[in-house]
Length: 200
Ligand SMILES: [Fe+2]
Ligand SMILES: [Fe+2]
Image (tube, rainbow, N blue to C red; front, top):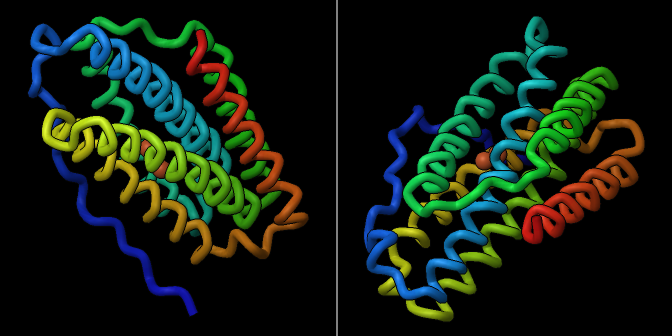
């Protein structure tokens, strides 16, 4: 029996301000730029996926839940948009492509039904949770003190993605047609998108 997942109310997101960009050593600057670029791409992807789902399912009983999760993704995206500026980081050049593909995946799975949309959510969030955990582990390994603010931000978002993942399961993801096939395909797509966004 799954526990009922309730999203906490929308909270203000604290953007890491310390250490300031100018105080970072060159290696950390590069590391942060890499983190910010790929996470920005991921959150943009999440934003358009939920947008696609919402456009298809807004007048169904899944509408409000999708809207709630989408609102949190907008917060995540806004945080990384600010970090792109403060850390003088260029977004991935592939944003327009992720926009189209993300929307298509969100709307496409939603057209297969609410369960398929939720299966999409579970697969995407599962991949993103693993990705945030990798980054958090890397920062902890380097210097928990120095990276405390970034670790806090990534951990907060990781926890919220976990809530989305659990909501997806609770809302019937596993009842989606060809659940394993669908989720494996989406997870693979996310991993490819992450790998490519890391590079360009
Ligand atoms: Fe997110
Ligand atoms: Fe999420």
